[in-house]
Amino acid sequence: MTAPAEPILEVRDLVKHFPLTQGIVVKRQVGAIKAVDGVSLDLHRGETLGVVGESGCGKSTLAKLLMALEQPTSGSVRIKGKDITKTRGAELKRMRRNIQMVMQDPYTSLNPRMTVGDIVGEPFEIHKDVVPKGGRRRKVQELLDVVGLNPDHINRYPHQFSGGQRQRIGIARGLALQPEIIICDEPVSALDVSIQAQVMNLLERLQSEFNLAYIFIAHDLSVVRHISDRVAVMYLGKIVELGRDADIYERPTHPYTQALLSAVPVPNPEGREQRERIILQGDPPSPANPPSGCRFRTRCWKAQDICAEQVPLLQIREGSSHPSACHFAEVNDAVGTH
Ligand SMILES: Nc1ncnc2c1ncn2[C@@H]1O[C@H](COP(=O)(O)OP(=O)(O)OP(=O)(O)O)[C@@H](O)[C@H]1O
Ligand code: SF4
Ligand SMILES: [Mg+2]
Image (cartoon, rainbow, N blue to C red; front, side):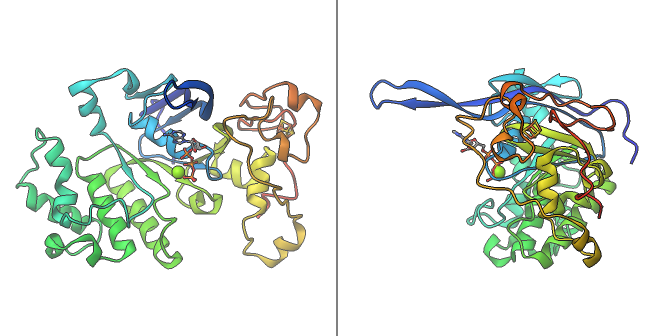
């Protein structure tokens, strides 16, 4: 897909540090959890940007910052040119209509005491100035139909639906206000593999039908492969590599991306033999105390002295077509050839 020049979402140097406090009566700040630490990215109309990284690397915090559900420590999030982090009151409410979220867990993200009709119609309750044509009930039934649910089930409760159906309810709710941007925070990871493909297909169909832009968050590179136009790989609050689908899956240059890809099962048995497997050792360090220089250096097999001394910037290096935050970024023939 060719992306138009003007991004619908522009994120610049976004930082979120959660204070670490000590003391019961008098709280002292003793440090900070650097959940998101200098993220910049663009999202274009109708495009899908995959965001991938291990648990705790800051994906959900990033999602909340984009929706102004958290205030950043610094940085900006511009939606159609306007910075949502500096917007308040009625104007913020209006901007929020345009950016909606589909959550990870369809079991806990829906209120069990509300009917499906109330859940999907709730955005109209919050945004009373948006009055759907033909009335709210008709609009909700239309939305249920759009996501492949029976419109006659409008009075049922969430427990009367399967996991995949509940995720469809969450998606219908996200579509209610006709947003241009949807943040999908691991929308399929709680679902059975057989259901995952159905929900992914639905999201793709809705994207082309409504020209939606997606930020699609996942743990695993294989989940976002099919749906993403571009992919950002995150490690401990930073984007370490960002590129088009082919850059990331066929020519990754950051050792962390290479390690993640190495862990992805290869469908072709010949490919499996050709590839050395890179096994990531240990867990990521704490975001309260990230390593100096390159944050990946404590797990990187290529680390040199400079990696502890200098933070590698996310930039395009010689011989590569896309940005990578590694002093020694290079294509490794052992990975990404499938
Ligand atoms: N409200 C908060 N207060 C303090 N720390 C927080 C808060 N929210 C998140 N964190 C911390 O920030 C870091 C990033 O968390 P986040 O939920 O963004 O990660 P994630 O990439 O979404 O992980 P997962 O894949 O497990 O969902 C973690 O160390 C987490 O403990
Ligand atoms: S900068 Fe150094 S430690 Fe970091 S990924 Fe590159 S080689 Fe590894
Ligand atoms: Mg998360």
